[in-house]
Amino acid sequence: MLSRIRWSTLGLICLSIILFFILTKVLNPFFLPRLAVPLSIIICLCAGTVLLSIILRPAKKQLINMNISQEKYKETTNLLELSKKEMEEKNIMLKQRTETLTTLNRINKAMISTTDLDRILGLILEAVQKDLNFDRTIIFLIENGILGPEKGVGIEAEALEKLAIPMKDKNNFVIKTIIEAKPKIIYSIEEEVLPKCFSESYKNLKPNILAAIPLISKDKVIGLVLVDNTKSQREIEERDIRNLTTFTNQAGLAIDNARLFEMEKNFVEELKRQVDIAKRELEQTQAQLIQSERLSALGEMAAVVAHEVRNPMASIRASAQRISKKIANEDPNKKYTRYIIEESDRLERVVKNILLFSGDSTPQSVDTDMNKLLEDVLYFLQPEIESSQVQLVKMFDESISMLKIDPALIRQVLLNVIQNGLHFMVNRERRDLKVATMQDGTNIIVEISDTGPGIPEENIRKIFDPFFTTKPSGTGLGLAISNRIIEAHKGRIEVQSVLNYGSTFKIILPLS
Ligand SMILES: Nc1ncnc2c1ncn2[C@@H]1O[C@H](COP(=O)(O)OP(=O)(O)OP(=O)(O)O)[C@@H](O)[C@H]1O
Ligand SMILES: [Mg+2]
Image (cartoon, rainbow, N blue to C red; front, side):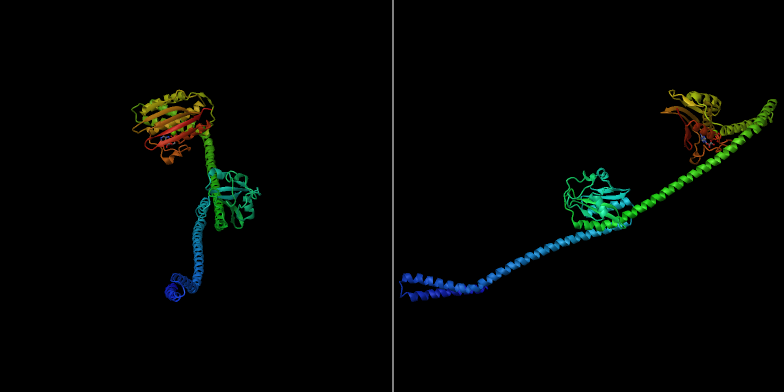
């Protein structure tokens, strides 16, 4: 087209020049040469213009057409660009949706595979927060007529605790959502009533910022998920709620299952606990029964022994002593009389212990100075301490208060415990006996430590049982009697023992 115009214009110029020459030649005879030239130019220009317009008319038409098609082209390009943008947006949305669905699927799987309620709630919150992008998410569960906040993100624990809503407050939008079992976005603040407890956490609420989605399991609403964008002020869209609902449908079921499992677990645990208690009580009663049977038999036996054995035993001992006096020291028979006397003494001790154990241990309490009582006991045991070559260390706290105790009974206890210490230190390289008194608040404590062989772990629990003994000639009643006496005084005995190092007995007696 352009080359055609170019050639036409060139032709026109040539034609105009030729016409100009012809005209000047033709007009020259009629006009003055001064007039003939401009006239020729004017005629040439007019003719040229007319011819040019004739030549350019199709070009102009084409130009207009071209403009129109260029416009159309532009429009189409714009349209194309718009749809490209739309496509891109849709692509991004699709990608986001796929990502959300993948996450939801992953979380759903994780939820189904666990029965730990706390973990399930954690998974729900993690997913909602991360993938659905809300500022705050709170999970509420219905329990005992209260819609209680179980777990939340984006909210302080203190503020969360305050959000419990009674189910009977039916006029607020939260409970309404539960009753209607349908998700709800708060479009109009004027129309919806917020629960009273929300006033602090949801101040100056704008429309489309808060939404509630019921948690449903087996057609029953078990709770609610509350989401909001109070910080970012991003409006919650129907699309957000759709995404959340696909997810809460699964969550409701998982939460319900976990709760059932927890209830069952608690029930089984409670049952197990009760069975254990019953078993323990049964064992205790059984042990007490055996003990009381043993004790009553022992009581009866003690009376018989006292009558039938103790008196003849005294005569045997007295006779043996008389015979012994008559036998010269160098006589080999002398040692038999000594045996008789020693064994009579031992039997006497057994009988005394049995009588003590089966007898009445009700204390006849009087004000007693514990330090003085201990001094008396140690003085009594002085010969034994010396003969056993035991190093005695006394650490008495002189400031301790007077105790209301039965001195005769407590004397027996101190004797039993100290004599045990002395006995178990025989053959030990180091023989230290430490006796200390102290006051600890409202208790007086007597601490008796020895450097004996110690008590094996498995025996510690048995040493207070009647008849438990590791001594070849022991009755196993010393600590059992002592324990009974101290318990009658509302006190207790504590034992600490380290094998091959020694033992410490703490007698703890209350002041009142
Ligand atoms: N200081 C101690 N060191 C090591 N073992 C001890 C000590 N005191 C008690 N026992 C252990 O506790 C057991 C029970 O002591 P308990 O005083 O009741 O009876 P016993 O001393 O054996 O006999 P009995 O008191 O008739 O002489 C002892 O046989 C011993 O095994
Ligand atoms: Mg003893």
